Length: 339
Ligand code: NAP
Ligand code: MG
Image (tube, rainbow, N blue to C red; front, side, top):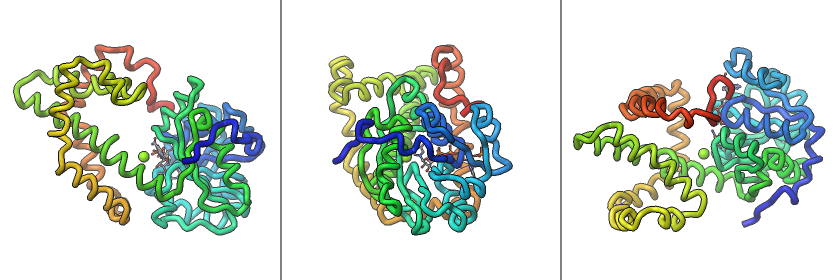
């Protein structure tokens, strides 16, 4: 595995380039701010006229242009909008008018890997995919660090695409912790698997099921919240710092014994078999096909599940308890008024 750092990148390559970030959401705001702070002279944001993000981007000091305009003037266009709209956006605004010899950049491989975007042949196509949420890409950068990122070139028209990608990643702060060379396919499939099985789907269901089990058994919801959600952060900090052994060093022997005997009852052969099926649905494109079909009819299931989940008891109890711990809200990663 090849890992690149700031010393391997020539940041000067993109200093003078016109970089446009399409979308000013989780990744978009972080890419724009980090590149600007690193010294890229012209960073624009492209949004549609009706966008709710226009004020946020302007308040942060960026010029906001249309996507049509971005196609004409940009040397690098980073697509930082939700994945499900990128295909349409590319087809409607970029395919015919993107500048020949410019670069189209992605923060995730999905649209290229599953053929939802077939880029014109006279442009570079590269990916810098941070291995963390956009708000963390920004907060780590501000602390002097960076979120490790995956780097790949799909199309190398200029013969310089990899160096441009390295310079972009370096501006993002990724060169401080490492840019790992990969393919769009590998990034995309492992990323979807990770978020579905472990990071998002697996973790939220684990937390919720634990919470419900305690509450159903008559324990106080506040107790269940602290035990099953709040403490996850404390354990994850230990894992993040030094791996599983580091975490087990810190917990009591009783907790460690319970970890060994009960963990495997929760993640058992049946769970592992299901993980393989989920991976297969990702590899065959079934998952993405279903997701795009859901999007084609305006996401009715997605929106209904999201609404129901927000109303779950664990969210209500959590909100009340977090209000008693005001320090958690200080220096928030997510401030929806700004980012
Ligand atoms: P996001 O926060 O959901 O993006 C929202 C932004 O896109 C908003 O500014 C929104 O404007 C804008 N937008 C929506 N529709 C648009 C349109 N038709 N034209 C122009 N702008 C539009 O997106 P994200 O989660 O950062 O994801 C961006 C990319 O990064 C994706 O490829 C994703 O896979 C990848 N990625 C994300 C993360 C993450 O942390 N979220 C991590 C790694 C990689 P409005 O305010 O008007 O809606
Ligand atoms: Mg992901």
